[in-house]
Length: 65
Image (cartoon, rainbow, N blue to C red; front, side):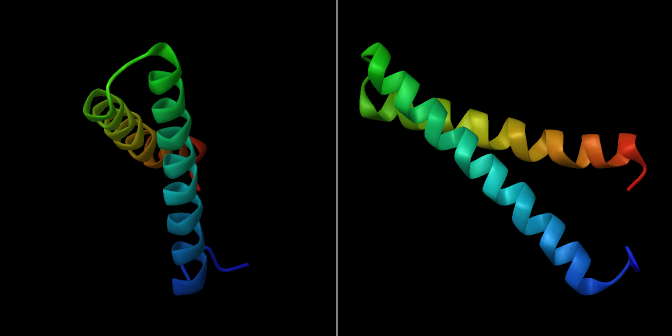
């Protein structure tokens, strides 16, 4: 498989965004369960989304694609 193809890169991007969105939803749920207000829970989920989205390219670079 050609790893430089546009379809493969879009697939990797979609999986990374999906992974980050799941992490954000879980962080929001845990924050609300802890009793945090909705703005604080949204802030925590945003941080989790950004961290997961930053971690994905780092892991891909480490693995060497």
